[in-house]
Length: 84
Image 1 (cartoon, rainbow, N blue to C red):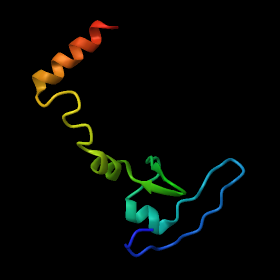
Image 2 (image 1 turned 30 degrees about the vertical axis):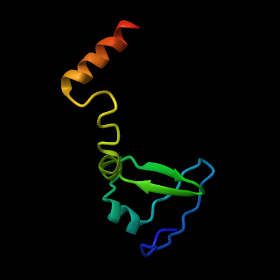
Image 3 (image 1 turned 90 degrees about the horizontal axis):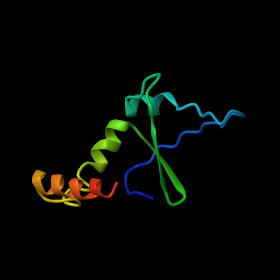
Image 4 (image 1 turned 60 degrees about the vertical axis):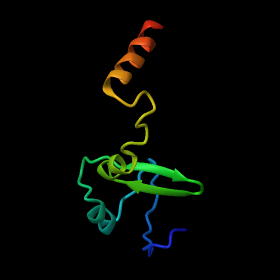
């Protein structure tokens, strides 16, 4: 478990597989009715992230995978599309 101080909350899974997110968690993640949450499985743990936080956490992970410049990425995509 992370060295960051952990606060624990409890929720009950309903017969329709729904979970109420505790108020403190909703406030901390800035979740509002209609918002989506991202459930991340980390081994035996589940982490609920706001889409904004998930986007920040994963930004740039694929940088350079398809080329280091816009032109290189464009060439890569053209080659891939030729195979369609």
